[in-house]
Image 1 (cartoon, helix red, strand yellow):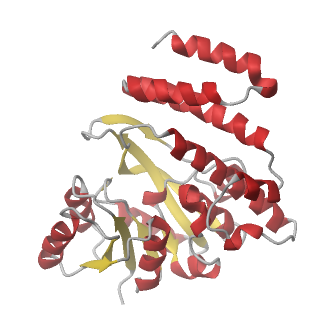
Image 2 (image 1 turned 45 degrees about the vertical axis):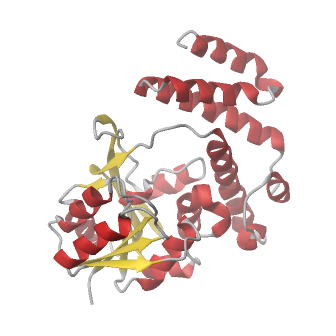
Image 3 (image 1 turned 90 degrees about the horizontal axis):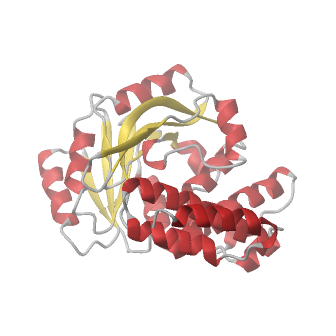
Length: 312
């Protein structure tokens, strides 16, 4: 039996898939299987995967039904043979010692359920943007999880038994499927990070306001559902297909809280996109923030928007 199963979902990822697969095959830790879950790609992704599989018996292409990321991830977990599962995305690049360092850390602390790493963020062309240094202590990670997600999903290695014990990824949380999983795992296990950036994390191009709004709703639902579970109450989102305001109402979250967070995140995204030189995305993020009801934050938001628009 292999020591590690790498789950890499892809749909139409031909632009970067070759580099992603090559970076996994070049790992100094070699005892793994690489499961590429091809979620009904219509580009050259299957061909790229087939070539790598011919060159390296550790690489397998698993054809999925095209039902989306969460289904592809759960399918990959189901097919995994190893007790530990590593995540990888089709557009990122793992540094050669990533698995070696993570596996050593997991062996030194068998109680860790999930272990991520820092990242070096790159743009679409592979140019460096910045680096992120996550919290490392499991107690600190547990505290931060109550406010936001301190884990970079494609960096993690996780115990398969723990992922299965909490029911895997939940379909309703498509835009925060990883955050929801960490929150549930944190209720039965410990989660940590290595500070070192062991993955080049590629930042996607283009800003989609609806995607950000869905992500905000999902992240708020993650925290609200966790509060219910930890109070010993039922989690109604277990069988949901999606997260909408009706569901958030059921979790005790009113629309004004969602609007405030969308405003905050829109402004945050605008600052980041301005840093990247993405003027179109910058304007779209500002427009998103500007379109939300002001409520009690009105004066603050207006001031921030006036300052931001100076750079347009």
